[in-house]
Length: 272
Ligand SMILES: NC(=O)c1ccc[n+]([C@@H]2O[C@H](COP(=O)([O-])OP(=O)(O)OC[C@H]3O[C@@H](n4cnc5c(N)ncnc54)[C@H](OP(=O)(O)O)[C@@H]3O)[C@@H](O)[C@H]2O)c1
Image 1 (cartoon, rainbow, N blue to C red):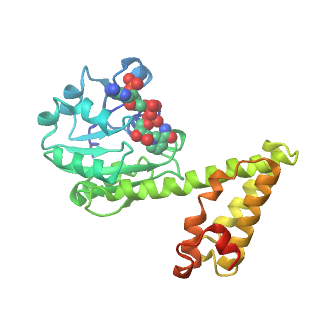
Image 2 (cartoon, rainbow, N blue to C red; image 1 turned 120 degrees about the vertical axis):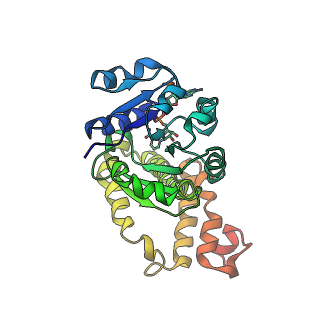
Image 3 (cartoon, rainbow, N blue to C red; image 1 turned 30 degrees about the vertical axis):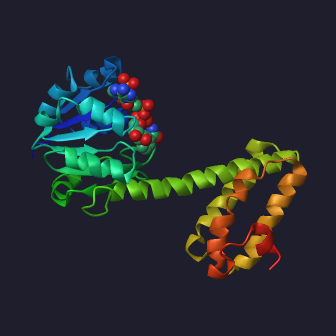
């Protein structure tokens, strides 16, 4: 069976990985990037370089876009929306739900928005997954192709859902990265080597904690956790580590404790 032709707009770190995965799976891949040189290796492997976005869009029934952000995407497609009409636009650019819905309205054809939960070297590998929402018909028709990038999760016909859940997952990740930065600073204030601390203690601890995400207060009551939380802030101050980041966790901790804690400051919660 012949493979569907695919166009990839944007050959940054991620777009390049997407185009390479489609090429590796035997598609006729047309590519376009603002800076043409970024596609040289792909062209050497058989990709077709389009001279502009319009030519790229006209080359395939499926257009996968992955550029910096939505204003960039709209700039790239300015002048090509007519050429895109009737084709399927799969937009893997990171943005907000509102931007995804707005872009769906601009496109006269099937629109699927996506959120890539992977870094470029993971594309096509077993741990990559991509969230999708928008046209169910288009998603189902091209699910096999999308599966070449990573596992697929379709979240419904609201084009904004993939962006929403992408940002929810990124919130968890960036919250963890912020906590990691604070954790390393606190350990370093006691003289520990950051890299050694991270490898031998912090990483195993975080991995273990992912096992209790759904039961965060079952065995460790929220009231107890709030006291530990206050201790972290106090010790950070004593060690000269700025507690600013963790101080902002007061609100989620309040929510965890329940409605009777609403409106209390951290100090009031600790002294309840
Ligand atoms: N990298 C990751 O780990 C990762 C993971 C998940 C999702 N994403 C998402 O994937 C998207 C692309 O990320 P990336 O890592 O590929 O970023 P990147 O390496 O910085 O590439 C950015 C892309 O946008 C293009 N671009 C920027 N400004 C432009 C303009 N004014 N006109 C035309 N094209 C322009 C760049 O073209 P030039 O080459 O000409 O500059 C390049 O193709 C982002 O939305 C990002 O959030 C990335």
